[in-house]
Image (tube, rainbow, N blue to C red; front, side, top):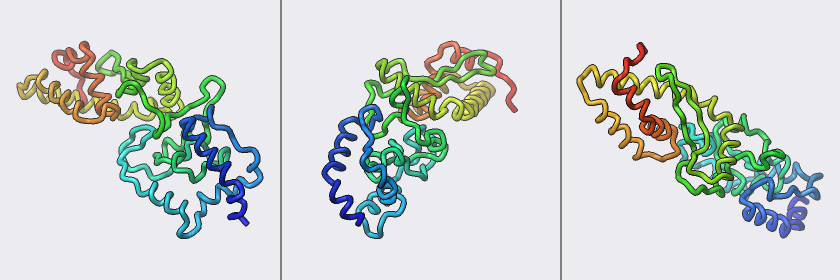
Length: 253
């Protein structure tokens, strides 16, 4: 019975998938399908209980067998162990097994994202990992503000982005609570940096040369990795660089 039901809607289903691709998965561009509301669980069942040797089962297995070592939504290191539906399956059940709508995500991001998509002020909350492209390779910017013995860390969209891109990045950061979640990482990196600088001074090393090594390391990794973002922020802050090279560093141990 289910096979006949899906066959009878195959053409419209395919057209809606094409509409999803054309609209880049944006909830503002992709309508719901009211006519299938009474069979929503049937569509969702293709994801939650795929038949043995089914095509959708093979697709899901392939997506779960990814080799990513970071979360595409937040950049946290470690293999993300869940698949997220960019458009939630309860509202858009016909996209429950569409590969364009599925991507790996860490548990923390999924816990923040849940079934949110957007609101009147921001029709689209989240960056789509497959479709969204930006005019600058730098998407996120970190500000490290004084006092430098106990600095504050502020994460926001890169100034190199266009206005509508900055808006999307800002909302994505807000909805996934990125600043709150990663402030601890930046504090730990900062403490590590202070210790390295103090060790360099104690050993008579040139602090400027050490900072140059950090720049080389930052340039060797992705511009949107958190470590690159941290060192890029440090090295492009002349006051902070001067503090690291000349000021009395706080006691950390």
